[in-house]
Length: 109
Image (cartoon, rainbow, N blue to C red; front, side, top):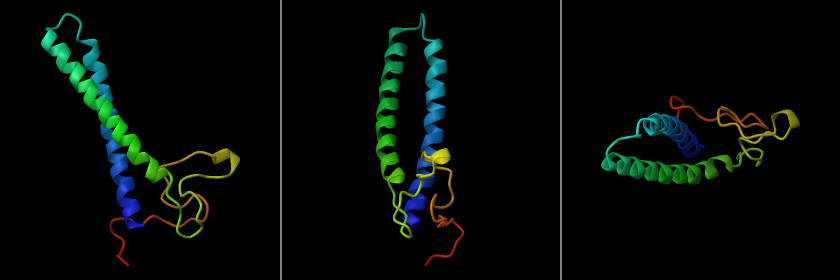
C-alpha cells in the first residue's frame, strides 16, 4: 500500500505540473505570431516534449487506476454505484470497503 500511496502522490504532483506546462504553452502560442523562426522551432520542440510527457503521464495513470484493494480485491478508485461510477484520484480510502491509504506520517508496518 505504501508503494501505491507514493505512486499516487507523485501522479497528482505530475498532473499539477502538466496543467501548468499546458497553460504556459497556451500563453506562448498566442505570442508566436511574427517571432523569429528559431523561436517558433523552439516552441515546436517544447510542444513535442510536452506531448512525450503526456504519454509518460498516461502510462503512469493506468497502474494507479487499475490498482486493486488488498482487502476487497475491487478497483480501489472505481465506485460501483451509479451516482459515483467513475474513477476518483482524490479518495483517501477504498471506494468499496474504506481501507485507508497510509499517509506519510503513519507508522510503517
